[in-house]
Length: 282
Ligand SMILES: Cc1cc2nc3c(=O)[nH]c(=O)nc-3n(C[C@H](O)[C@H](O)[C@H](O)COP(=O)(O)OP(=O)(O)OC[C@H]3O[C@@H](n4cnc5c(N)ncnc54)[C@H](O)[C@@H]3O)c2cc1C
Image 1 (tube, rainbow, N blue to C red):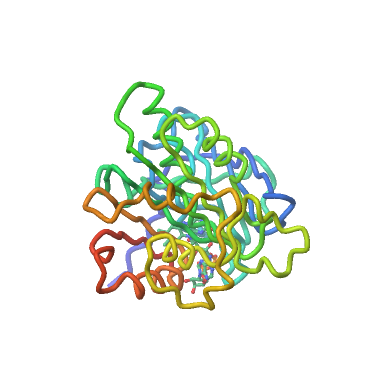
Image 2 (cartoon, helix red, strand yellow; image 1 turned 135 degrees about the horizontal axis):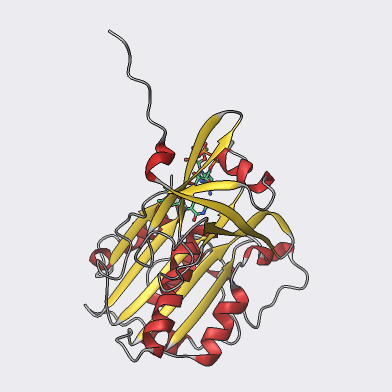
């Protein structure tokens, strides 16, 4: 019996091009990519979903999954926030491509969305590029607020990274906190702050994101609690009030499974265990 030739996955995908690649704070392995369809609009999606990007590499089709960092209201292009871990090979291709390289976008999928997960008080917690879906979700909420539609009573974005130069989207989140189209808290958390002589203690929290969150909620912290410090600008009481211990609160966690497992561990057996939703990336 003849084996059927494998179908090219690109047949069902939207042809596009690499329209932008912007390194984050000069970081060679961390970038915001813009991918634009060759014709028409990007495939429809909900804020928080992910898709596959495909490209050709040495005669083969390669595909990787990335969260969409743009809001669905932006229909001319999609944005992605991507780190080149250099663990595998696929994502490294993307970093090597010049602008205009042909790419293909799959139909977006994923349940990490407001239609599945909504509460008056939302904490959006991500490590590294795990903040990507929240960029799209928060941009969507800004559009909703502008249109006079429903937004949560309080939203916080908790972004955990090792060093401050990995705080992608920092300016955008800080501006949103100032402008506050809805009550918004930005919680950047840096774990290796000891290595930074000019560390910004005023604005950036010291410690792992799951530990800072646990400390805020009054849960056990597993690290040395002395190494876990709020940024000087933070009012812990106001922050706690943005996430009351009630059915009105929901925590979304995305990215590094170790971060998610660590928070799951301290939330286990507490009222927060049923109020957390996870998206693990590997
Ligand atoms: C639902 C979903 C959404 C994703 N969204 C994004 C995104 O928005 N931005 C982004 O940068 N990546 C995202 N990823 C990860 C991405 O799909 C790739 O797995 C990653 O870029 C590694 O690709 P690679 O070709 O280098 O290695 P691969 O050959 O794909 O994998 C190599 C190994 O690295 C592991 N791995 C994957 N990502 C990481 C990481 N960050 N740190 C450590 N180990 C890792 C994989 O499990 C695997 O064991 C997402 C993954 C999933 C499942």
